[in-house]
Length: 202
Image (tube, rainbow, N blue to C red):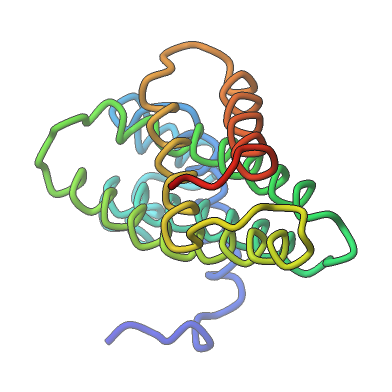
């Protein structure tokens, strides 16, 4: 029976963290196939056999590093919700920047997989889909603040956050080698123009 998180010895938890850090660095910006387990083990300073004691396969290592990266994104987005003395437009722009930055690194494998129906592709999509719901909730709260303050016009808070996520994901999947800063600027410009200037759609 596996140990509960609180029962894992500190040294094992630290080693697991080191392995995950190494994997995250290598998977960020690279597709799944190009990262080798031996490479992760070397960067983590452990043997390949030791790595496999913590993660039974390369797939499990990748998926956990993806979960970890998207969890970090959620923390960054949630941190932008609280300071309500900061204009909603500033907070929302910071959220878009975080979203573009994280997904630009983490979607490389999904981009390569394309229409692949493998178990890895399916599990990757499910993780991103589940995390997208939480991302949409964070965006929704800041948009609601902007509406309440009069900074943003009235919008559909159920649909618009999902459109923002879709716009970022779609842009990343189609950008090839173009710099992510260009996507970030374009999404923020498009979003702010729609929220602050355009009349309501009828």
